[in-house]
Amino acid sequence: MQLSSLRLRRRLLPWMFALPAVATMAFGLLYPVAESFRLSFYELKLGEAVSPEAFRGLALFAEVLADSAARQSMLVTLHFAFVVVALEMVLGVGIALALEKPIRGMSAFRSIFVLPMMIAPICVGLIWRYMFDTNAGPINAWLEPFGVKPAWLADPGLAFLAICVTDIWQFTPFVFIMALAGLQGLDRSTLEAAHLDGVSGWQMIRHIKLPLIAPILAITILMRLIDALRGLEVVYAMTNGGPGLSTELFSLHIYKSAFVTQRMGHSAALSVCLLIATMVLSAALLAFANPIRRGR
Image: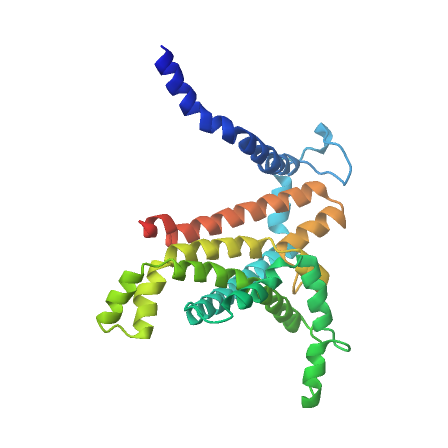
């Protein structure tokens, strides 16, 4: 009897240690999500309490689907996410492949290179808003000798380009660190055997290195995709979604719905739609390039 009781305690002990973290996660993550789902069925203004009279059922979701501004912001978000994630993966992996061998000063380079991702997003937005300023920005000062003075943040196409450049500057280091960690964790004997078999540098990269770090790259793409879909602070500080709706990401549209027009129920419905879209895209990515299946 004592032996079975001891075994039961040993089985429960890990769960007891994990219980505080699980409870914190449940309260800090699941409760806000559940509350967003609940509020999405009510037409509420900011500060109003939930009441039976405010219940609208699925009407708010139908309104969101029929809202041209919401559809436009989602299209802008998907375009933004595709552009920045694709370019960040190419640049980050390329830099990691170029710098995977130990070289002098690599530690200092890594420390400097990752600085952008350590800066608060709102500060990044303010920095690059100044950089792209038409009259006082350094970028136009460099272009002035060529007789070029673009209105970066006043032109829809250039404003979209500006927020993409800013995101690439901030998060390419993240892709670089992830790819470099994967490359440096490869089995050296496999690489040496391929080298002895006469495999060229490009063949080594294409057929050996990249397939071996594919699980890490898949996770990196997933993390960057989720971050890009919920981007807010940088765009808010740089353009506030303008000019027009050319840079209004979906998260910024949600923010304006909640705190500008003060439609909390509508904002909650938008948030649920963004959550569903993110889950669908993430599931599709994992189905296409499952890092667990590939890592076996």
